Every structure is written in C-alpha cells, then in structure tokens.
Image (cartoon, rainbow, N blue to C red):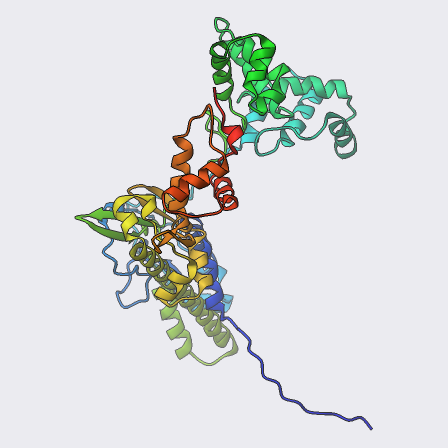
Length: 498
C-alpha cells in the first residue's frame, strides 16, 4: 500500500503582467528605435492612431509627456502627415460585416491640398559596398572580382584582413567552387590594398602603416617619407616599444632628425575602417532623450518628444464596438465584438506603457539632475558626486533594474556635451578630510597629471600614486593602475616621446 503524504509549501514567485513586460522592453529602446516600435504597433493594430494625423476628442486617452516645463526650442517642429495612408478595414473584419457597415467606414475629410505621403525607403550604403564599388572600377576578370569581393567580405571592423591567404584559397574552393592559387589571391589583395581609405586590407599594423606611408610618398613626391618608411619596415619592434634612442643609434641620426619622421607615422590611422571621408560607412547618430539647460542659475530638464506620435484610440473602432455590441447576438457579431475589443484593449495597454515610459524616464533623469546639480551648473567633472543605481532607485521609488535600463541606453544633451546617463554614475572613496568623493574626480586629476607630465620622462604608477596622495587621495598603486587602464592611458614607458 502506497503511503501518500499531502504537504503544503510556500514560495514566492514574481509574475509580470504583459504590460509590465512591454514597459521594460520599451524602457530599453533609444528614441529612434522607439519611434520605429510605435510605427510597427500602429501597423498591426488599426485601433491605434496618431492624433497628429486625425482629429480627436480631448477625452480620449493620449500619450502625454510629464508637465516638466519643456523648452519650446526643441518642440516647434510642425509635421504635416497626409491622410492617404488610412488602414483598410477589409483586412481586419469578417466579410459579412463589411456589407452592412461599409457606409459607416467612409471618411470625407480629404482636401485637394493634401500631399500624398509616401514612406521613404532607406538605402544605406555600407563600408563594404563602398569598397566593392571602388573595386569594380579596376580592370579585373570575373574571377579576380570574385576574389576581391571575398577578401573585402572578410575584413574585420578595423579594416584588417585576418584570414590567411591559404585559407582564402580553400574557402573559395569549398564554399564558392572557385579554384584559385595563393599567387592569384595575393595579386588581387595588392589591388584591394590600393583602395580608399589607405591601409585597408592590411594583414597587420606594420603593413597598414607601410601602405599609408607608401601612398603618401606617391601622392607627395616632393616630400621625403623614406626615413618613416625605414622605421616601420626595419625597426617596427623598436618603434612599437618606443625605443627611439635605439632607432636613432642604429640609423645614425640625431633625435632632431628622427622626430619629424616619427611625427609623420603618428599621423597615420591604425584603424582605416573606423573613419572614411567618403561618408559611406554606416554612421550612428546619437539622438538625445533629454535636454538639460542652465538658465538664470537654475537647471532645466526636458524630454525630447518631437518625433514621438501622440497616440489615441481610434474613434471609428470605439464606435464599431458600440454598434457591434448593440446588434443582434449572432456568432459572427460576437467574433467581431471580441476582435474589436481585443484591438482596443491592446491599444490602451500600449498607450499606457508609452506614458509610463515617458514618466519613468523623466523622474529618473530628474533625480540624476538633482543629485548632480553642481556638475550641471558648472560642467566641472570634479563636481560629480558619488552615485550608484541604488541611490537613484531609492530616491524615485523604483527598482534598481528599471534605473539600470534607463541609464544604460539613454543620452542627455547638456551645455557641456552629450553623455550616456551612466556617465554620471560612479563609486565613491573617502579622502583625507573624511569626505566621500567620486572616483570620477580622482580619474580627472589622474588624467590631468598625465597630460601635464614630462613626455620625455613620463611618470610611473608609483609616482602617480604619490601625486594623488599629495592632493588628498590616499589610494593604492594597483588602484591607480586600474583607473589608468579605465581611462585608456598606457603605462609610462609607452607614453614616452622625444
């Protein structure tokens, strides 16, 4: 006989509503992606409309920004959208209902002055497309063109070819059924390396710099780049380690003669794919979510809502719901009522989520502005106070994860530049006077010390530690090294200059 025991356990589970999940996803979206998300929602839900495109009653739910004294300087754009892109109810309702209600779905609010609105098609040219277009201008056979395009397709984000030539030969044979040789690939590679920007398709940094120097020599025959070329070609290891004295001694030149050649090398671009004067490389522009102004000694904050649609529930859908609900209770009517109600509910949820997003963004940024008011008034980074996610979360009564989502993906435009919100967060340490100061303040002092050091004899981490200690910041040498690395500052011997 089986013994069955009935036990009772208690456990906690966090269950998020669909609206909460939707809000979390919307919080993470930058402004441009939010606009695209709203457009997508409007496309799939005809009950959701933009009030800038249609007249509506003031009583209908709309997306409103918080009453935050928003500056009109950023909100005076008038966008005139055409009404010719109305959705077609045929795509959403049962066929039998269309016959009875077709006359109720006609609108006569068009004007002869209305301009037809067409969604622009974005044709963004990539950096790879730019290189392929240049390659097409060279007199190549079809096979050489295939090899060249394959090489371009294997360049990394910095523009280097990390794939060895023998591997490219094998790849093309097995993946493209193109039989080639290492000599053929090497020949085409030399052609690709002639493309702009100079240094593209190099296999390492040394080759990248050599390509650029040789291009400079060809384009400026009256300038002499031979010493720079010799340094990179024959003394690259010494150059990379900044052993300039050894280079001067081996080349039997003075430091005065060596310095101009080194200066030419330092002007070169070690990552040729990072910048392109052609303007064809994909460029990601930052659209700030907030604007901070300083007027009459006070900090003012506003949300950027210029391009965010003013959403509301379609009056036609509300009317349809009422009419379907009052009609005879047939199965088709029930289905129509259920469909329309579902769309309206989804639209209300989405509008509410957008409103919550706007409010959450504003209260989060307002808390940051309040805490870091001294910085926003002066622009002095040493005025930034220690601040962690928990500080903001406790101030506004929201979860730390919510603050994190806002801080990691939103930008604010200030009089001192545009910053990611996490720029204002930092840990704190206690100085000699017992005051808690931001680690950002220490990093600023550290950077200033490095900027003003004698480049012929740069300071070690030990010496930098003593500089900070003299200024009242007693931190360990390993902490100095950590902050230096976070600032992207190399060790002392790598900062040495003649």
